[in-house]
Amino acid sequence: MGQVRQPRRVQEYDGDLGAAVTRAQEGDEAAFAVAYRIVQPNLLGYLRGIVGDDAEDVASDAWLEIARDIGRFKGDGAGFRGWTATIARHRALDHLRRRRVRPQAVGTDQDVLELPSPHNTPEQALESISTERALELVRGLPQDQAEAVLLRVVVGLDGPAAARVLGKRPGAVRTAAHRGLRRLARQLGIGGEAEEGVTDGASRTLGDSA
Image: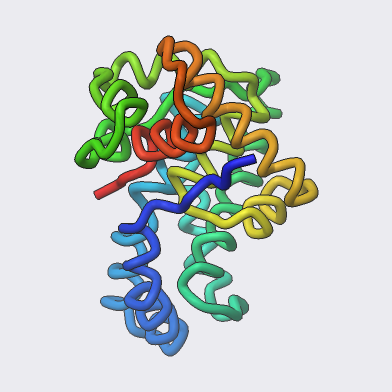
């Protein structure tokens, strides 16, 4: 089974994020703003996949809790992304319980879905689809697959971190993410290529965030 690769841009910011979080824990408000700017776009994309149009309200609630409890956080930039995703997910589930509505995958912001340069035939096919088409495909995924894809590809968490957010085993999250990406590729009618190349192409389509 091919691995779901984290977006390179997300990983590249982790050093800056970790440094900003450390300064924010010492009371540096400007550093907290830096951490917010790094984390918020992908976190908001993830929340849109759970609560739809209410994502900004839920994100605001989550950031109030993050700001309140940041002194308790221990870890690096990647760990902070996982910690904030866990808080955001709890707030999203609280919101859904209040609404008495099941989670629905409804896609991500357009900037989360910007496409990189193509490298092979499956990637070219996946990367040529419009943002609206990508959103429709994500909406059609089973909820567990959609959330696994969003955490792995949009938020950029690795398997164990995504599993901690979801309260599941890493293998289950990897399987759900892989099946979701494979399903996206299948719905686009891509065939005749190695499975890993197809799922990598789907990952690139959804995951290269600004």
